[in-house]
Length: 415
Image 1 (cartoon, rainbow, N blue to C red):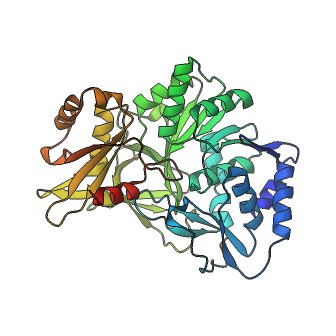
Image 2: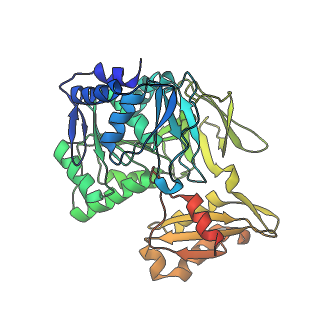
Image 3: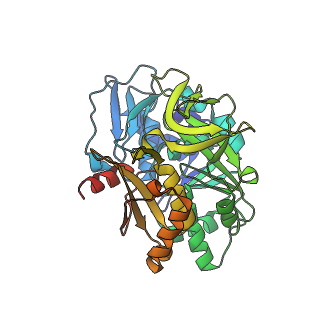
């Protein structure tokens, strides 16, 4: 079984994919991919996909997955062309890349079953079925997007894929195609919400919102439900190498936005007492990992058995002998400057680490920087208050839409 066979199992006349420029039924997708597959052959090799559009990325992926040309959809080209010399393992049907938000993206190999066998469980949590019309935005190089597309297709649903980063266009697509599900990271959802409030409209067709990769608590969920009044919001915690790990529904969210919920069925989570490192056991892992797997994320499990996420282990630095969490500082930044797009990076110095804050798109910060910093001082220890605040027009992003801290760190190192 492979993903092209999964597409062929669906109703050939039903719409599978709509983008700003094209539309495909399941039958049309299958024929395009099959024609491309028929033209390939040769020895087993990694096949990097450099297509510019969602539709072409998807068609090439479906064509190659399950052949000797094992596909990997290439992320942003800032790293140049990728090495094609690595021969994929025999069991691999595809390669996936980590987000690279903390450094250079890493390539992992996946079997078909490592995702496909989990589709029923994830679709059950996310409310995905044959009636789903889901809006997603961005490249399929973002593993979350590719997985969600394939999960929707496995249920016979429809994906509305937005290539462009244009909230006004997303709103038009929601209205035109009567979208009933959204999959975006919180930052994109809030941009969409801002556009909808400016237009004075709400989307009562949307009944499911799925998000991950960034924090989301009860207050933020309530804001989203002002413009998506009928939507159930599900936030998940996961990774490229482990797939989905935990989830929480909006009705269970609290003011504590570190809460990321309970494990998916068949996933087992533990936290090391001494290091607070999260370990996971799951059948949905990439090839080459042994279980339980240390995620290099930090957290704790509360008395109710729910997981709380406290950031990456490498986000910890030492200032004047005190261990500081950059993730904690970022949370305080969101509380004090709620309209800001911001990130905290750790600049490692020989004698003292420094915390540097980058801020973009904040009217609150521009109006009264002194008050913002004073608010931060009230929430943080003296050692936790950042050393520098740098304003920038735009923050660099990776394929998922998350802030690319690796690029920020490169910028910071030259200061």
